[in-house]
Image (tube, rainbow over all chains, first blue to last red; front, side):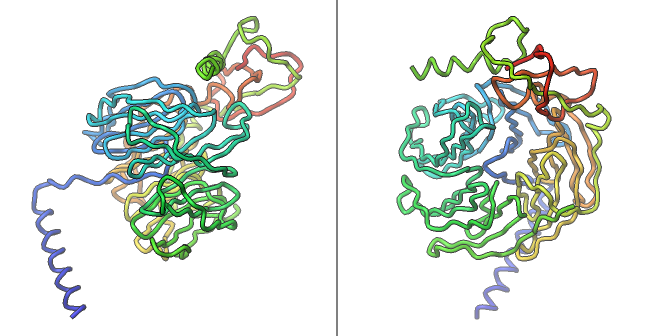
Length: 253
Length: 177
C-alpha cells in the first residue's frame, strides 16, 4: 500500500512538473539562502549588498546585468543582512537596522535598535530576533563582552531587548521551530532549545566542531562551516542531539 | 549619555586625517599599518578551476542542490549536495578578495574586492563570468580594520589594497583613524 502511495505521489508530481515546463517560462527561478553572516541577499528580483557603511540595492530584472536602483547610507561597520518576510534585518557594529521592503527596490528604514559596540549577525523567527554580539578587538573598541540577545520585534518600529546571555565568540546563527543553532567560533557549535522562544536554553555544545556560519537547510537538516570543514547534521524537534550526515574536511595545502 | 557616546565614534570612521587635524590624541608608538598591494591585473584575475579541497572556509550559501562555500579571500567552492550524506566538491571559482555570494536560478553574484561579479552557473563545472560591475562596495581596503592607529595612506597608483600589515615606522605616518 505504501509503495502504491509513493508511486501515486510521484505520478502526480511528474504531471505537475510536466505542466510547469509547458507553461512557457511562467516558473520564476528560486533564489537561494545565505547564512546569517551574509553581506549579500536576494529576495524576489532584488540583490541587496551591505557595504561597511551602506545598503546597496540592485535590480535583477535582467539577471545577467544587475542594475543599481538605490543606496542608503547607514551608520558604522555594517556587517550582515538577513531578509525575513517583508523585512530586512541589518546587523551593524552599532546595532540592528530594520527595513520594510514591501517595495523591494526601495526599502524603507523602520527602526534602528542600538546596542553596545560589537559584531552582530541576526536571525528572526516569529516576534523575536536572535542576535549574537561578538566583542573583541576586530569588532571595535576592545569591548570584551559577547552575548546572545533576544530582541522583541513585535513592534518593528520599537524593538526591545527581551533576554541576554553570555557566549564566548559567537559568529553565525540559525533558527528553526524550537531549535536555535549558534556558531561559537573555536568553542564549537551550540544547540539551544526554544521551548520559551524568549529564553534560549543551551542543551548541547559540539566543542570539536569550530563553527563560523550555519544555514538551516530544511525542517530536519543544517549546514555548518568552520575551521575544520563543512559539516551537515540532521536534527529533530524532539531530539536533543544532532545526527551527523557528512563532513567535507579541510585539507592542508 | 548613550547618544553622545555614539557621536564620539563618528569622527573616527571618516578615516584619513591630516597630521594636524582633529583626533591628535592618538599616541604614536613607532608602529603603524602599511597597505599590502597587488597589481590591478592580479586583483581581477578570475578563473574557473577543477575542485580544490577546502582550506579556510568562510560563509556558505545554499541554492539546492548546490552549496557555495567561500574560501576566505580566495574564491568559491561549489558543492553538489544532491545527497547530503555524500556531498561532492565539483569545482572552484578563483576570485581574489572574495568573501560573499548570493545566487538565483542559474546566476551567481560575488564580490571581488570592490567589484560585483555576475556568473552564469548553468553548468557549475564550467562557470562563466558574464559581467563585472566596478566599485560597488565602497571603502573596502581604504583603511586598516582598526581604530586609534596610524597608517601609511593608501596610494591607488601602487595597485589595489588587499590587506594591512603592522610594521615599525621610523616616522609618524600622515594617516590615522
